[in-house]
Length: 422
Image 1: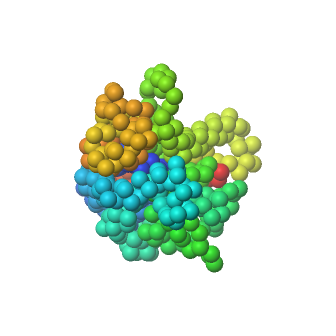
Image 2 (image 1 turned 60 degrees about the vertical axis):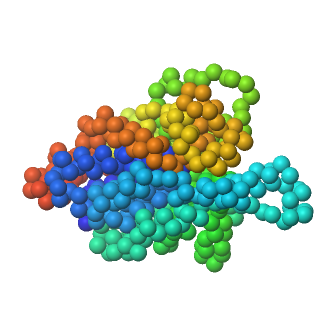
């Protein structure tokens, strides 16, 4: 049975940047074993798991092994530490020509192609290999058992509907959860499928949209980070009483890293990288600030007044990279397959190390290569180690009863928290 208070895990999007999440989770799993003993590995500490884009894939993998947390983290670690781009998208010359070259050509000569060749390339890259990887890494057939055994309370993945223009959250839960509704946000209770994961991780322009049947209709869905205004909301609505939030950039990076000098007009890659940051990173930071403001405001209210408001404080721990991932990516541009490097060079991604162009921001989302993903995982582990006291306090491992510690279980804790529903 999942632990109480019900802890939610929120995994943000970011393409290859999601390797950082795996490093964080690996460090947490190791700390948990040290605090609670070897049997702690038998169960996930997260009853509610919510993911977006590549974070949705990590979330689903964790949920499917909710009864074996250490195993789920190990499965993710093996994939991410030995990653190669051809596991996610066609990186060979023929595959890149069929998708990327045609797509870029259509941008400049689209009217001619549309008229004479009727070619309609769907995206810059072909992510067909990702579908095969998902089937080996995410055993979705185990989800019903996880709910039935109460190892997991709820799993949610977020998408964006090109058809309706709404941000859509698909969720499955063990106990009934009343769907919620907000402006430009839709919620659908449905069994999570591989198509949902492909849709949630379909980076705009880079990967093709996925078709999902929703109710009586069928629509096209893309990356869940698009039009996402409240990334924390699904976890809270699904019952989480405290949140571990793992970001993929910029919230905790050194302030000095943000001071840059202009060097001529920005390339297409720089502009695309800036747009990607807006899609993948900004909404989470804004929502966390909103939550923290509400918590501070509620702390200033007298007890009687606070009881009359529907808002409640929410305990959270935010872990995000302490280094600028754009700079990390710049060190590994040479790891990209030759055909992909050639394609990206055409939009401004190039150079090595300090001489790398500003397009490294764009490349940071596509660098599904082991040298890069391993460095991100190591960074995630180091960031957790640097905040070990905060992590231990959040999970209250030191407060577990000795008998429960030997059994690998935590006693229910009265957190005094209720839900804040944005």
